[in-house]
Length: 251
Image (tube, rainbow, N blue to C red; front, side):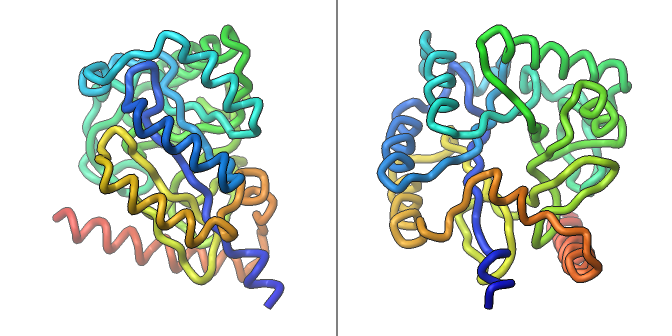
């Protein structure tokens, strides 16, 4: 029982957080997280140029807000550089995801440059960053090499039932695009507030109220990383089943 209890939990991951976004729902989520002592991962786009996101209301005190989240022990993550997709992959990226990409397909030098520019913006605004997740989940081996070259060795993405390590990078799996709680495993769930309406938020609120005791923070998720053969087999089976499902669902 202790094994299952230790290795069961859900990490909340917020995507596409930028100066321009759905601040009405973001503010509601912030209150919800405060009420239930939830510490999410916030994926910040440091230099957002995404036209779709730019259509949302602008917040001039954005970086003050990010610093306030950091003071509450929310984890601030690098979510790309400008969120512009200028490469396309047909299910050939590292996770066999496919689609548009800001990183996949670029040279190592280009990816390092984007990451350095991102980190410079975070540093300028006094935000500490230690992890990354790419827009649209698309990576290649250059991405991982670039991350290590700028001192980032943690990624919230990929397949698995529990955190794992590959190429000297620690991964926390991201399996779901909506709040789902599994009876076993450590994963993150992806939240896109900019695609939500009030009905979506109410559903999320009800999920939090029902499951808040099972929601974990980033450091706890990472602490469960284990390189034993049992964990490797669990992740191997999960990875291959989900890759097959994803490939055939898009074919």
